[in-house]
Length: 422
Ligand code: LLP
Image 1: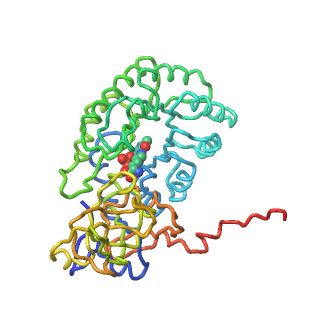
Image 2: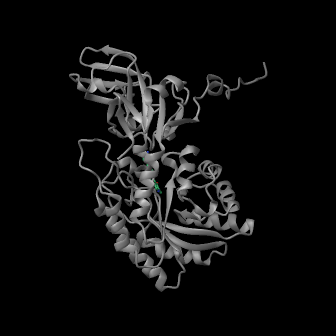
Image 3: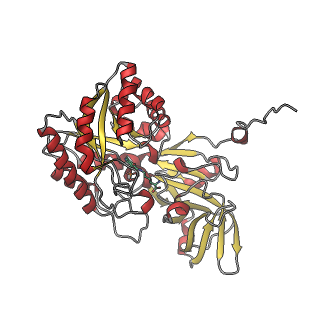
């Protein structure tokens, strides 16, 4: 469910006409709906009603401060994976006590920065990281609150590039070694053991692997509690999938996901920490792009638009599907044409959709790439020296530019000509 719909023949985000946004901001642009962000956050929060649960939005999915602040106002914490994300979350006024620092390669200076802020916890992914964090915390005269990320070796049955819970993946410590690492952590003086962490992958549409992982987590939690560890929370990661293709069956509802978590872990008296990204942000955003040319190739029709793989990498990187909607509703009733939507970047892999049956677009038409609110703008780059595109947040009848388009001066201004001796 989202808040992009046709009104008076034009695609709107809530009550805002997207053709007006395009006119005033220029294309391409990302546009997010506050109501959709709020709805998805609340849906998840309601699914855990009655539980002691903290929803930490995965900032990697969408790090715009306007989005983070919207979620923080509803009570969300944040899951960050770098000092940059931590700084963004705090700039959006998220309390450090609600921030989890995850990631397989935190540097010592990132650890020190996060320790000084007083964050909720570090998810530690290896013995070397455990030892480094202990040293950094010791030097600062602090105790680092930690959970160990356990790799349960379950197949999340998702795209290989976003599957994280198999033993061959770089993430976490093997389940069989977790207990020994907790025992080591207990001996390191500057660490405070507070939880267990797992995250098996992203865009998961089958709850069975989740259940398998949570069952293992239960086993470990009971073992640690019995051994006297004073755990405070269980961090269950994120990963719930969304319906990218309207033709696909619906992925599991947050209610069913929550039911499994409560069934596996709800009776342990521990706080449940969740790290959802996609399920909250994906449907809340579209990438709006304009047709530059319609090019009739020898074999097919190419719709050349002003957005490219540098603006939305998901189709190129994961063969990801995004539904395509015309901004003008009347185009939907015209006989469709099979076409490729491609960008101006000089790579064959630069596409947004391939061999899609879509309305007969013409030059100047606006095209909405749906479900681009998660892992869209955050994964963009300036490849081909294309400026980063603006982000717009809609609320009711209003819209705000929450990130302006990068100017050409900003784009090229950081380069320096070397001043070599002659
Ligand atoms: N927690 C951890 C430790 C993670 O690694 C991730 C995502 C999340 C939470 C949030 O997962 P979500 O609820 O969004 O599935 N760029 C890819 C997705 C990469 C996901 C990385 N980790 C894509 O565009 O599909």
